[in-house]
Image (cartoon, rainbow, N blue to C red; front, side):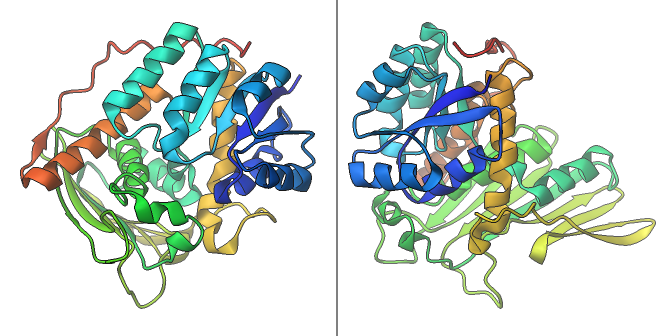
Length: 354
């Protein structure tokens, strides 16, 4: 039987989130909720969802879903996660899970006390070119990695679709930076220190729109993470993530149009690693939208008791600690040393949703 879920939030991303869920036959949306009932009704009508609510608790009591998918703004995450946990309902939540690692740890504790899984929808690591790059690195086609650069640099008018981002005092590091720091961990492992410089170029926003982070690993390997919504380039790079990875035996580049360029003693091999095509995906976001289905498939397998999700709340805490350290470094002007990730963190049971 498919798992029944409720979607909370009917804004810009909810349309693509729900479209992606409908690609997976083992999940069915039974209700949509938004504080603006008209938005919830419009989204539900578009995707043939029966239930429409403007009150989350009433929705949970009436529908008793197997899980909720929280696609509301980050400020609403704590209340919504706790409410679902109080009703014994598993949670998938958009990133950033919370505004700090400490706050995220409290949400995880609430879910653990309630005996329900808490998973994070972190889809950037599921982009087709990122997965392809990981496969190349894992087979050591460029030897041992000693340095890398990862870039999300563009001038895309992101505020047009998500105007609330203008008001966030912590903007690009918390928003896109959470994605890129998770990708960095996925590709290279855990880091021992962070040094960050942040800037606000756009005078009409509250937070930073440019940031440069240097991440250091235990053996001295470095990853430079560059973020910008203020960069005018020859061609608009949004929404692509670029990579340049140097290893003892060669290099790997992820460049425009999802092209991977592997250079080693055999020469340079060029491959295309474009995203799967979905009719509902916005062409301006295609490589990102194309990753949502695989991310959700991974989370759904966890909730169905079939396999471990990659982006549990426990794992995401390591990413949020990097985000916190980046802001601390930007505020103080100093590199921030990170504790070694503990192997003693309790892993959630896989068992099926209630």
